[in-house]
Length: 146
Image (cartoon, rainbow, N blue to C red):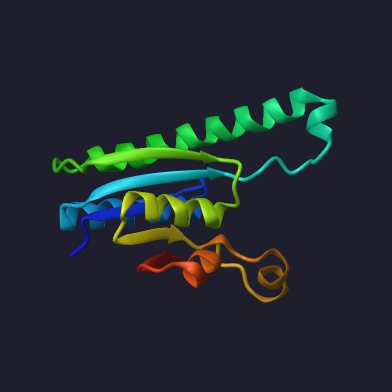
């Protein structure tokens, strides 16, 4: 049913839980798994130009977090004897939901799996959710793991 699954990770606990689901589904369907980590654009406009170390520190920290998140998914994929074909992709300088959707389109993914942070009430209204934006704009199935 699914041949190419995109798993969006941000390294959070919710994402780590969703990683298990993504790996298990890829294993069950014999699908290739693409793990994607999106680095949001640098949030301090103007400051990075005055202090390039701020931008460099931001990017270095994001890249370090992506390596940790990807390693977690790779470890899950290597467990239980049945190998899972996994690729990773770091996407920079784009809003997370747009990067996820573009990566899915570029890859020809059949399914997107993403974790939910479980925000509700005013926090969800003010902050929004990457998962809800992906669901709202996706043209393919999205599995949100709570």
